[in-house]
Image (cartoon, rainbow, N blue to C red):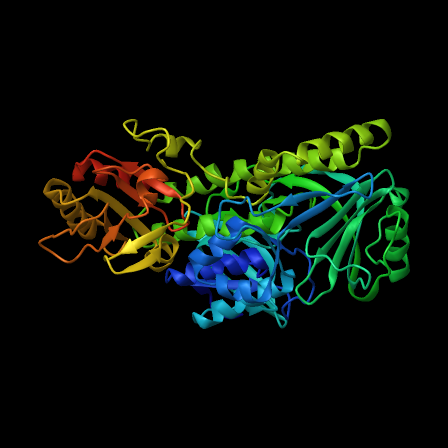
Length: 539
């Protein structure tokens, strides 16, 4: 038996969520080991929709360009509700730099993330099958089988990213609460010669449902359910003849399907662990929650779990935060997952309505989708950009009551904004967050010595107590700002985005987290009070 391998974080699973976690940790110089049972990367397309908020997370990680090069930016969906006339849902309403659904096979998502990890010097240890997981006050202990050998690992923390059938979850006897939904869906990646469509193409009627998702290479993902084939004994293997038969059944005017690269049946369930944290173990992605595919939420939920957890683990392991700060992962991410499970379950029930109820659904849906505000609400909601944490207790306690209602407070997502940097060039906010992690914007309005003195005093105290944690920028409306030092760069709010959209005013200190959410927004102009808020954040 080999000697025990020690690391700071042990990641179990190298699907999209595990790879996202590995990239987040590697970016922050956290020592980790990532174990994966598969000998080689998967070539299955599986999940394919990347939402706008996930694209923002990829940008904050520094890997978004690779996704933009390979993915198909779906501009919306055409919904055929009980008939041939389509209702169009446009996604340009999404209030993000990524107002679309990026369509990309999961295998390519995994490849991009693993390649990016390799470019940073990180690796995945494949062929490792977890046998046992235990933990105590000193750490987490894992035994894994590799080429007939038992390898032992010890870590400060463990991220369970090992999917719906998580061995980590089973080893720790963690409940996976919920139930199977009892539906069987068909899925195929095929060519559809008679369909030339830039939109997602969806049909829903009393015979079932079919959706066509366009890939960049011109092929399509075909997914749906045939009402006539529900309740039959479950099987995974789908033939091309069965797929064509089901599509013909559901559609009044069908399409010829050709050249399959992947065919499968799958069932659905909704389940969630009661707590995403079990002492030193954290559950992310499908190990924490599963649900049906409506709305394209599943993989995105997991990727955003990993983004939320990664910088928090780094903050603790580098000594900036207390271990109790990691409870915020459960506080922030569990309610998001719970809402998605409830919503996707409701969507499945609505989709499955038939007869008179189905006709009412179709009529109401068509009427609603003619309203621009309805389309805007649907687009922004499904994009995840409103998955925010301002209602979490610990974030409520960091609120500043003196701020206006429009001001962004603790837990809110910070949209990307255009900045006029150093009085010389346009820049955007997200690249700064990507580069520095924690970013603090202090609004000086103009040449105000009292605010400038506060900013420099606060910067000195932060650098003393949290060396290397954050980057501070002064934000001015215009004019020429002079300071006695050159340590704090100047941003000019010439577009008034900081003032009008973030609610900043003279003396505002807006602390932004590495995941693009507000840590806190303080207007005290008292460096000791602002520092206390930073201490409070990390408790």
